[in-house]
Length: 569
Ligand code: FES
Image (tube, rainbow, N blue to C red; front, top):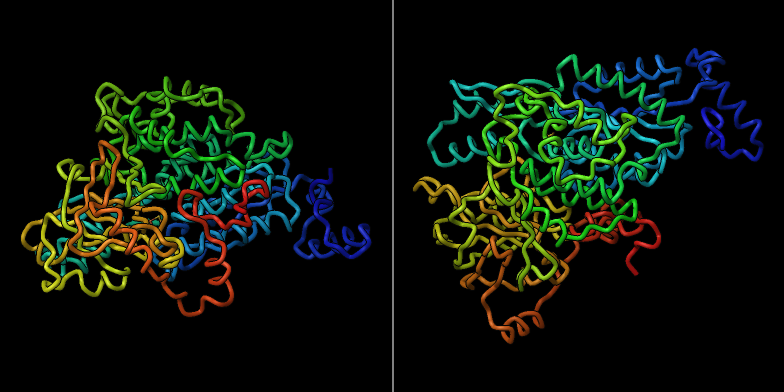
């Protein structure tokens, strides 16, 4: 098989001319024949002025290039789409599949023998993993890494759990406009990804547990010199992976995915990880069994004491021994024979884990933060497909709750009316929001963290049962049921709920039910009218998205991006 510069020649009808043309042009950059004869290691460059979570990418690329050259390869960085959570309208999730397609096609189109995926902000690593899985070439991940913590008036701050906590205090009137402005300069004190166990940290931790990055890659702070050394070592490893031809499908096996689900539960990780890794696994033809996922959740305790489920931050997890140390704690529950991009197995990673005396961030299994895992899969007549709740970030007393539904038709409707006292929401009500799923919003926004109505927050209400077909940021907390499937916009029963209905949640029994007679539901179903397409939905990427996006249980991937035998009829 062709390699290096000879790989994937541009079609001019004359292969010799194509190689001559390519070589002549790349020489304009000053490359020698010796350099151009080496294995080529592509490096995704996701630096963007709009993406502070990737602010250290230039340093990482320099480190990766050094490692590639030390091992005798030729590093070639290339740009791809970069997505930051706060700079993606209408939502970053809407763009994840576009980034996956862009990255996959750039990997395919350009000659490279392996690729180093440099990403970090929530949707970027999932998009890159989906791309590398489909492009089917050797790949290694270098996460950008978490920010260091911030400090404010004696408190330690973490983006973005504390963004939400302090904003809720501002809404409740307990802190004023001057203080919230001060806080905005302290929540994100360095480059890097959110430093709580949000989606970015969860995905990076799972990437490390999957063996797709080198030890420490999931947790080392973005601005530490150690991260650049990890980048350098990853460049070197990429040259070896290229020589061995070890691909993502050799590393991300069903057993490795099960290991990653175990780690997801043990870290009290983000609900979004289930959607993203379902999409990645789907690209490799690995089906995700939600019942098996929930069974892991019943067996695996939450061991990592990080916000939003616990107290600490990513840098503390790193200093406590990181994911390697956690894997040692979980070893009896893992398949330790799974291979890693570092050249060994998970057993080798565990053997090399550091024991840090006195650390209390990674708990032993006999002294967990919470028994029975962070995430639970629910079923019932309100979620015949499934729904998800992050138990570890919920109020225990609300995990079993029955209340009156108060319904909002959309994210916009919720924003407009949530603080209106005329709506009359009570503390024991169940707030319902619909048309916020993959197609309905569109883009399944992280709007599932429905705020407590201002008048209730001011009265001291800190949590309520809230449910929707939206997602929620991994940094958020509360008794919040998400990903109700099928979503209301495609006819799911969430679209049939009316204000005043009774809803019963029992997270321990894994049930979520609308307490309305079936005959009444049938009548409502017969009268249900699907929502109109959003403006602009008849052309371009929005049309492609609306036509092709799948539900959360298929990772919200595009149907046509799955391997042919996985595609829905
Ligand atoms: Fe990028 Fe949180 S906004 S990781």
